[in-house]
Image 1 (tube, rainbow, N blue to C red):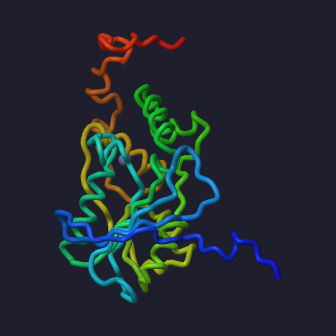
Image 2 (cartoon, helix red, strand yellow):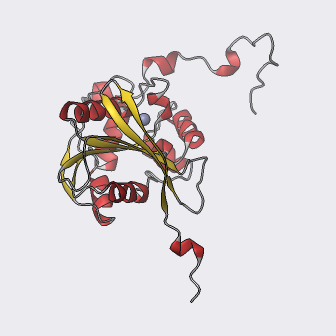
Length: 246
Ligand SMILES: [Zn+2]
């Protein structure tokens, strides 16, 4: 009987594995390839599991399923709380000596870096994160947790406690066959630049977050208002001047 290769080939592959010392402990880092037939917007199909301690066969393993956020995690952008949430989850797992951080390469809630920065442009004009995505014809949240569920199954956890404020993430993982014992909140506070985003997540996306006073959550943060458009900066001596787009 002929069986198509796509059916017999596993969708999840472990590509590489090594211990990585971090300030929160020595995690075993695994790179997984999740065999999406195609990826859009430059998203990578290679995802990461950072595992601390023995998790196979264990119940109630503390897990953070975290989606990539280059702007905050690499450049320290204050527009969101992703970096703080990642750091807090890894620190808590380090304190307990057991747990998993899954790092999924779905930048910008799955719309990719370019679209995310296009949405930021719209947000700088006063639209919130949901409206900005919709103006671009993009979903509010395009994330997919199929890779996360497959990775957790491969790691052999019996059940998890999920560190998240997003009830949809709990439901999505349960629907994919992951036993989620309960949700553990991830509360890392806010700043003047992240407050509008966190309020939009709370009010429009149903995240379980404390409300922020309207005076704090009002858009038009100072740095964005003060930032000069690129075309008004003096040209670099070795580069042609930036032409404003019509
Ligand atoms: Zn972020």
